[in-house]
Amino acid sequence: IGDPDHDDVYGDAPDDIDAEAAMEAEAFEPEPSDETFDAPEADDVLDLYSLQAQIVSLTGMVRELQAEVAELRANPPKKAKAKKAKSSSPRASKLNLRGMIDAGLVTIGDELAITDRDGITHAATLASHREVKTDCGLESRINAWGEACTGWKACNVYENVRHVATGKTLDELRSEAQA
Image (tube, rainbow, N blue to C red; front, side, top):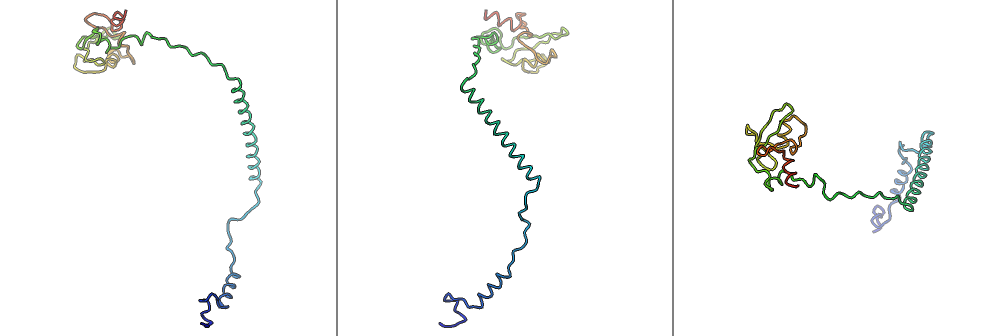
């Protein structure tokens, strides 16, 4: 139990270990570091002053906006009266092609015609509420057919396409039915 070489087992370290630790501690010097504190340079100080000036400016702007908001809340602007929508606009009340078919004004298989700027008439057969079948057998949307035949970028088929059996435009047919 009294072995001086093994006293550390009982919590007492030999004196020579304490001496070694002390020598190591004295020999330890921190390694030099790139992170050192330097006094701010003139440009950095100017940047700080510039930031402070911007903060003061922004604070003033915020106060002005808050004053405007308070003023608007106290005296709200008068609202413009909303215009009432008409109960029925001319366009909304007119039948579309499906409605014209349902009303019996035109039927699937009726011949339709459109005349281009040069006076040439192009014929097609009504294939559905939105498509026609041309003489050469091609099916296309009625608007695309009207645009292709006339060369126009857009074509109002109701005003430009005639119902061959009656000789009237689609617009004339639907207007007569609604009169």
